[in-house]
Length: 151
View 1 (cartoon, rainbow, N blue to C red):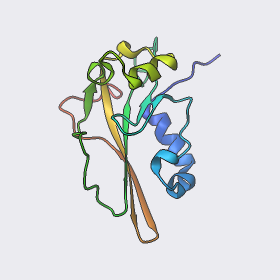
View 2: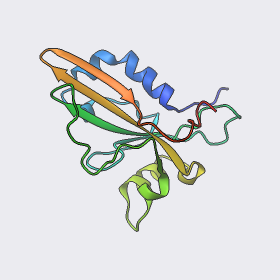
View 3: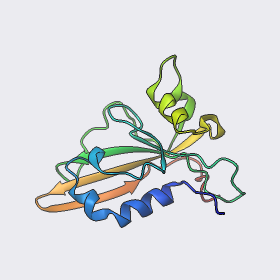
View 4: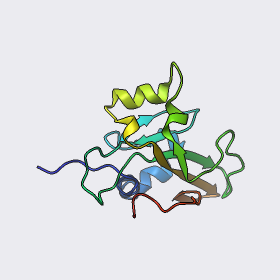
């Protein structure tokens, strides 16, 4: 029996297969993301989505655990990242710390091994509108190190 894998690659494949619904969703946060891939889904704080960690994988397997921030725009530019400074990676302790933390509680409730991957890759799912045209991009800010997924 094969083990279920979680990664930004699987997330992207799901987005691609469902691109018409993704483009048509009133808000990105309203899109029916694959809940099985996610350890957290929230709004109003970073991250909007967290992909599950692949615990106990073989060397070379995707690590999973990526964080995704959603950005919706009525143009082809994103004017503000509010308090989220775009970065290529983020320490999970910075996100899940504190006495009461909805991100940590959500991840634990989904059975995610939060501390198995202390440094997480960060991606941005950006959707822009111009008239009837819609462009969608999944990208990351440049990081000073090579991605754990390709090394």
